[in-house]
Length: 84
Image (cartoon, rainbow, N blue to C red; front, side, top):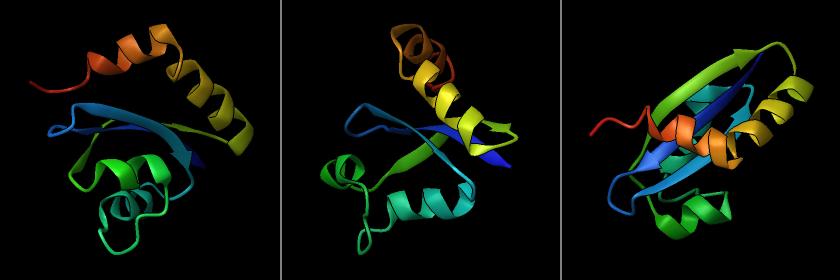
């Protein structure tokens, strides 16, 4: 099983959309100041919170859905899940 997810950094007001097979581990990686592996989230810093996730059966479906969420309409959908 894979997960497609969106995280939000309140301080920077930025959204990151990705996919993974271990959602808890990936969220910890995004927020670990000593081990920031992704350039985008590393540049923004720590403070990412999960605002949306969904599960899919395999990586191929996860990549397709990730691409959909990164589109204009997908980002509008994700923004509706960010708590004020």
